[in-house]
Image (cartoon, rainbow, N blue to C red; front, side):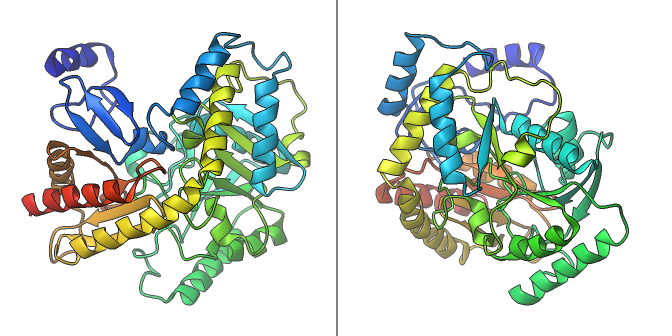
Length: 428
């Protein structure tokens, strides 16, 4: 069955549309933290549709909200008043931490970052953007132009001038051997020096934890220290929370809050988990920034009623059941288990992350070089054991990406860690 569907896929889909596994998997349905394939095999899902199934598969509260809204009206566009959109915008604005916040909904994180770049460059009258090395911000023309990860950057052509800053990867690069305070100081000095060689940029865009890059992050406080330099030049700070938002990191509701001592970002982008699988993205910004456009703009599908109903139900469930707290508790246990596994494996360079956003970096034993073949083998072995995980990385790095739904139980965390342990052992 998979072979026949795979052949059809290859005949009509682009060659660059990547699939996991030599024998690609068709997922037919899910429930809770589990999914099933077309042959009826069950898997514990530790990747959640690339961090998108944030609460649970087939969450009754969300499916009920979608069904009821679909029975009334599915879509009307932003040209008409839309109660579910206004209600979700009110909640997101309040949760964002941004004063006098305005919210614009899109259909994806890519489109959210595009919108943030439009706002920042228009507001600042500059097309220069600062981005982090090893970053990823989407697959559109402008988002690819600011992506600092060669594996996800198919062209150097861009409407933007992009300058890349140190600091997104703590354990690699020229400052890796420094302590945290000295690391931050060196990155700040690098930023100051960079700004001395260019016209003032529009914004710095940064993921608090780099998703596609392998769940890497700087020491807490780096972007707060950057903020002092940015503010002195009038440069905006865009926090790309497409993967880190909504409590996934456990310790904070937003990833930027680990760097919030100098206040919230000027712009926050979000997507993925808020819809629990429905296509929702968006931008939150101060009113003066959001309102800086002097031409008409709408969104045909951004904020459509059925996705907004899903987002409202999903966000309510997350807050009412303290899934951020669950991510902190169960994620802490999972990281502890995986670090115990890694201690016995010379090919695991690092287990990193926080909450239920965990990276396991693989290298060739005795070296600092990535081991992509083993990463593929571990993915396949974990699948054979009934566990789905992701992978990522950049600049000669490769990491397993572990990001289950935030309702993960202790028993499921233990089960997943045991399967991943077996997959690592079988591929040494």
